[in-house]
Image 1 (cartoon, rainbow, N blue to C red):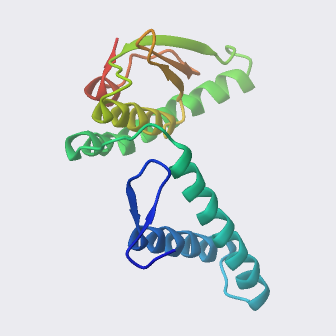
Image 2 (cartoon, rainbow, N blue to C red):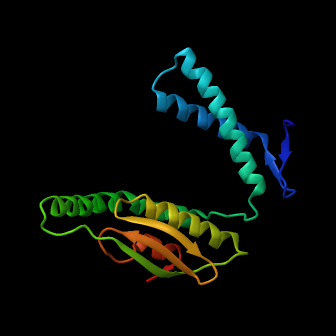
Length: 173
């Protein structure tokens, strides 16, 4: 691996600095996970960081789709704290209703339209962000986006409307 760049299977360069940032981020995550710096933990951690870095580089090389993230799309995540708080309340109410036999917990598989494109990297990036952002909340799990039918499948414990954040990223209620 040269210091300047590493070639990926698609012919584009993957800078050494990005590999270093990835490895350092994984190492920091490992220290945070084990909450210590004992020698045996660091030896295992070093092995885990090397294997994880190599795995992520392999995934990057084999991935045919390139995604492009725009700041206006990434910023849509500002709504996540509110969605997490309100969905935590919704899930808590569902839990107590089910626990006290006041009503069963729901399980709703839902489909909504989603603006898709196999060739536009910005639209692919919006799909990735939508999946991450919707799954971060307790009430909703985004299961996937089907580009052939321009649909998104998601699961909810309590049926609610498609979040405004997802609509801003391409979901169509």
